[in-house]
Length: 557
Image 1 (cartoon, rainbow, N blue to C red):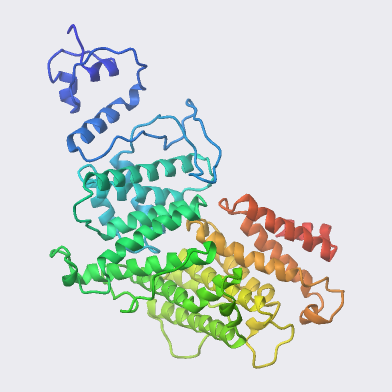
Image 2 (tube, rainbow, N blue to C red):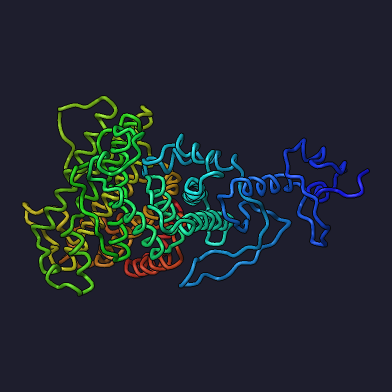
């Protein structure tokens, strides 16, 4: 037996033959190092081989910084220390070091979830390209930063239930920290050289932005988004590839449509943050129009992505200025909101609804020129049937995203009209139905319930990050405000309440209870949002003086 054991054999408590490399290290491809003994507590034996291999790979590549590992799986035999959320920092736990870095297999296992739940809404980096980055992450920090961000966003969106200090939250925070550390190391290593930007670098920022949104850190999300936009502007998407000093090996037929999709992705995210956070938008619609056709991506992904772009194009510069002016900073734009403008916006949404159904029929190869759907219909009656009968149709989650976003936009336009006293309890025959004071409590609530009922389960909606929750909350909250304007069915039939027939009030309250239950079933809805809806729900119960009956109806639902 050797007088002295190498570090690896000593930590693993196995026999060492004293050679260099010793037999054990040579067999397991470990770094064989002899160093003085220490009195430090030994790590858990089952994790040592992976830890030693990981340290050797980082040392050999010289590309990745030292990062304190955080736990990504629950361990009942260990304990962590957490900190309370702070308004000036990450709302996330601070556990002590426990586990080594995730292995290659851990990242690869996330690719199917990424392709199903992330890529259809961010069709920039394919699953095959993600796999290639995983293989290169030890040698290239840009690939490493992307892989950590890819894993963070995939886990953040798909792993439920979601709690701020749950194990999933800890893992996402750890992966975000790793991505940021690698990016920082890359930028500080060469601050005077040319900044080379790729679509992968920009998507790293977008994934970190999405994760920040799921942590309810809109301010940090905006910072990541602005960085992504700055890098996008360096690429000069509106110019031909040959004029951008790009890699000559890039295929223009693939790279140009990809960069166009990237531009529109940032366009969508920026406008969403303008509405919910009040941050200014600087991106204009791309002068070249919608993304060019790309045969390398699935048709349903391409059509679904184009449809969501068209919806956000309705949110033009005037729309954003009107919305931002509600805080009183620019009264001129508030006064420019007219009934004609409101009806025009609703007509655009009507037209989008018709075009979306035509695209769906064309996607399934069953387009027909016979008849058109009603402009004011739900626009999604045939979507579920189509998607289940033909896998090439839009997925259930794509359908839900389009319908909820359209209802959310209708709600925003209605709110702008409400703020300028443009709505009416009784409409002339020529007016759009959205000019009605009770439009959200009638048409929008019916359409939203129809969507949820057709899905049969809201499980797919839970796999879409925070933005769909914010949209659903805004629609449901507005419906509650309108319901509060309508007294019990047996009350005065004049004014707003007169627009509903006798007995309809109870039906509307039951529908709202259904929507409230659905909203409360989402793990990502925060306590403030729950309290807002609960308070309004109690007010409605008191107003209609039917608490016991409503509870019974809720239980039956």
